[in-house]
Structures are given as C-alpha cells and as structure tokens.
Length: 356
Image 1 (cartoon, rainbow, N blue to C red):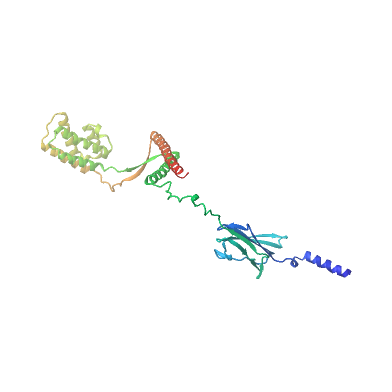
Image 2 (cartoon, rainbow, N blue to C red):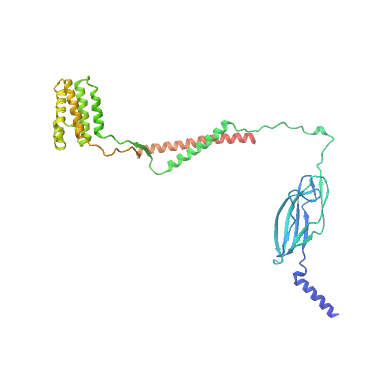
C-alpha cells in the first residue's frame, strides 16, 4: 500500500514539474456580440495556446468568403502573440471581421488551427443572430418625401481662382521684399556701360557735319569748328584746350605734335580774325579751314587696337537712395501682406458660410 501511494505522489510530482505532460494545445473562439443587424460587422476572436517554438497557422479566408453559410469574412487582422509561464507557453490571437446580409440565426462551426502540421479545433460552435431593421409598413404617410437634388454650396468660379492666385503672388512678393529688406548687403543697380568712341571718330563726324552748314553765319561756323578741335585736343592730348588761347595751344602742341602745327595754326588764326576782328570769311576760307581741320585730326589721331565691347557693371547706390529703397520695400511688403491677408480672409469666410 505504501508503494502505491509513493507511485501516485511521484506521478503527481512529474505532472507538475514536466510541462510536456500537460502542454496540450488549446483553441478557443469568441464573438464580441451574438446579435447584430443586417450589414453590421462583428469581431470573431480566434485564440490558440501552445508551447513556445511550435509552428501555428491560423485559417485564411478569401475576401467576402464564407466562414459559415450566410456569414461572410470581410477582414482579417494580424496575429498578436503573448508569452506566459516564463516564456514556455505562448498565446496567439487573430481577429476576423464578419457580417451577414440575411436575417437568420447562424451557427459558426468550430474553427481549426494547424499546430506543427496537426489540426486542432475549438471546443464549441458559436451562434450569431442577424435581425432586420423594423420598418413601419402600415403608416406609409409618415415616411419623409424624397429630397431634391442638392446643389453644391460653393463653386469655384474664375474670380475665386484669380483671387487665390493673387493671394499666393502677393504673399510671395511680400516675403521676397521682406527678405531683401532684411539683407544687410548694399543695393546695387545693373548698368550697361558703352565705351566711348575714340576722340578722332567724334571729331571727324562733327567736322564733316559742318561742311553741310556752308550757308550759316561765318562767326558761328568758325566757333563750332574751333570748339570741336579744342574738344578733340583736350581728349587726345590731355590739356584743357577750351580754356586756353590760340598762342597757349600752339605752345603746348610744339612740345607734343610739332609736325601738325601748320594746319592747326592757320585754322585758329583765321577763327580769331572772324570772331574778334569781324573778318568776313569767304567760301574758299571755309573750305581751306575745313580741309586743314580734317588734316590735323587725321595726322594726330591714335587708332585703337581693339574697340572695347559694352559690358555690365553693378553700381552701388548712394546712402540716401539705399534708405529710400529700403523704406519702399518695407511699405511694399506690408501692403502686399495686408492685401493677401484680406483676400485670404474673404475666401475663408466664403467657404465657412457655404459649408458651415
């Protein structure tokens, strides 16, 4: 008898200490609710408890496939896994969304789960009652009439689109002006600089033009001729010929261009006689002075090796203009932001009135 009790105690101790002896697979199914209306959805929770490391496969259903006749599966969730018994056991749960479109009392049969290639089914079947919506078919006069077609409360017209574009443009302009206003760099202006023509080109052009004014007053004609020659000498030789007398000019040119003095001396002496001694020049005098002036420019000109091409330069504005432009930028940014804000508020108010 003692040996019998000893065997019973050893068996109980082995059953408590060896998990493999009581680690059976358990499959359970539950419904969130057992009664729904037609078309409503309910969650079917399928739970499987097995040993850690075992391969568990839940059933998969096609979209709107039937888990039972008349009961469709519309969704399948992910598998949630939790571990118990110090990680030796695991509990896996998967949710299925089911529904039905016919009123009846349905029976969902036990569901099977594959564990290590073996099928384990839940213990009991589940009942699901699907009811219809009660409709009062006696008092038909109480039914609400059909509504007319509802028009859109707000329609985008061309004006709304233009105002929206204007709001964006004004916002961008305000931001650009504000950023440029805050930039500490000096404001510059882009200028295209055209290099001046060589002095002899302008002088020859003006002297040639005087040939067509042969009928003009002699004093006026010689005044223009000598002014062009003096301007040419100022640019060509670098001294202020417009403020010098004839003798002073001749003295300067004796050091620079003595070979061309004869032609120039005759022109300047004749011009002095016309302007100061009231000498009346003849047509031959004008012709001789015209040719002498052309000869002097041709003999003393310096041909440029290569004409400089026009180029772009950035000129820094004065402090006063810098300040004025920054003030204008500030006013422009504030004005643009204000107009954009008013347009945006009007559009927002229109949407609010239409929909709310």
